Image (cartoon, rainbow, N blue to C red):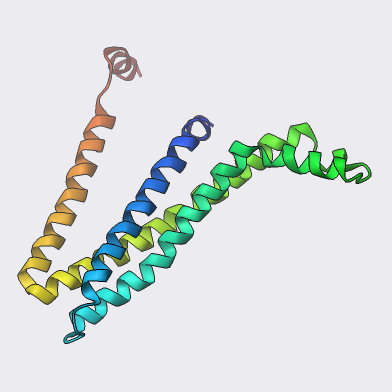
Length: 181
């Protein structure tokens, strides 16, 4: 229940960060692909790079559209606008389809669906982007691609270690409570 409450409270931030991530990946891929398109497909590394970026780009567009659409629907109050539009059109008993108690439930359901879908989309897109960038570097020299992959893995491990260390920090009250148990 605590995790659910936390996610509910940081949902707007997650939508914003997700949009930045997908937008950054789109810009990066378009930049690299535009450079690769001028290179003849002389080897498999260039073909792999362009293929990986071509596969990742639609995922990023889908991810950013999904997050922006669901976030914007909440901001414009789509449920209230829809209810008002149908009321003005004279739709009979439309209020029964839009009970006030359901608005928050619908928003939470949309948010969970968008965030739940955007995570796997982002993971696949990041994997394809990493493969594409490594292949583009491999075109230059194999050891440059290897250095990139080693540094990327090292960075992920390092950031994970920082988060693990930060989560292990305990206040004196928490340490005392754990010691008593």
